[in-house]
Amino acid sequence: MFYTSPYSRVIIYCMPDTKNRVSFADLDTFLKVAPIIGLFILGYLQTLFPSKVEFEKIEQQLIQMDKKITEMTVLQKAITSNTSDINRMEDRMRNMEVELAKHNAQESKKGGGR
Image (cartoon, rainbow, N blue to C red; front, top):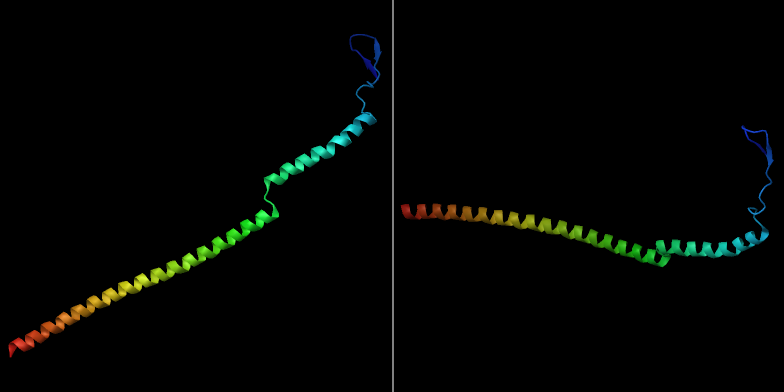
């Protein structure tokens, strides 16, 4: 390569550096080390995610939790329904007591007036 300086008329010829070239030995060393580094990287990535067996266990746990939640929802609806039935029964019993008291009051008026 030729370089010229804008301030002088000297032409300098620079030869490419042979020290920076990649040799076959460097490539061979890299190819020996690269698979080991790759295996370490793959091993690390596998620790970040659950295995298939662990994933299946988690899936089964989620299915069981979903079943339990569904069961609890059904039970809650049944409890709510039973509570409203009990409240209606109490209301009907109060109405029957009022009717019985009215009936007794009428009977006592009829019986006391004769």
